[in-house]
Structures are given as structure tokens and as C-alpha cells.
Image 1 (tube, rainbow, N blue to C red):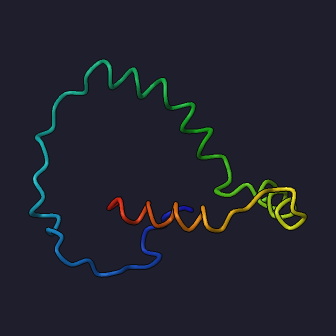
Image 2: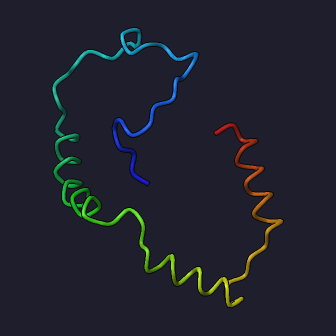
Length: 89
């Protein structure tokens, strides 16, 4: 899922306004940062060209699930969802 600026806004309470957030002073870009950036740029460009959702794979998984070829354990899914939400993420 892509987050698109201005698509939907929800008021958030208990969060400091942007003016109150302290940011570290700007420093010179280190050599390792430049290297990482130049190494990751092609990968980032390739990722940006990829679709957000692989509809072909989604369709194949959906079909396999409908045919019973893909095991599905609703109790395990529910337990995983509960564990995720209890972890405080």
C-alpha cells in the first residue's frame, strides 16, 4: 500500500507539533552515507518501478486457497493477530 500525501487525514492527539520536535543539527554527509546512497540507488529505483501489489500472485494464492491446496488455520491466524496487537507495535 502506498501512502499518498493529502489522501486522508486523521487528527492525532498527544503528539508534539512539528515545531516542537528537536532535530539534530545538519552535519556534513559522511563517506559511508554517500557510498550507501550510491549503492542503494539502483535498488530503490527498481523498487519504485514495481507495482504495489502483485495481482497475478494474489490471484494464484486466492485460487489455491479456494481449491483447498493452501492450508489455512483460522485459529492460528487469530492467535498471531492477537499476539501482534498485544506486543504494542
